[in-house]
Length: 120
Image (cartoon, rainbow, N blue to C red; front, top):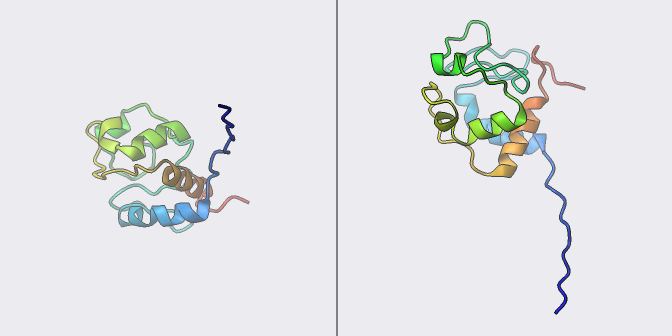
């Protein structure tokens, strides 16, 4: 028996879908030009930023001293289960489990530079 395999391209990141994934995050986090620290730190420029580094936000020692930088792989592991990635973090969140939703969320977050402006 001959079986054909068709290569399926990996699903692309979708920032518009990521904005919907971000909706529950708005309870604690802000992003954009007018973003401020709230229950959680503002998330402008988060992808590529050192953990625990937003001025004026009172991080847990676990997060502040984690030594992490929020690249895509690190953020993916964290957003799936924050307490497992950074034991002792203040972030009480059950996590985003769906890999496509995480990719879309990252695409949404990556749109915003450290100044909160959307990148061209």
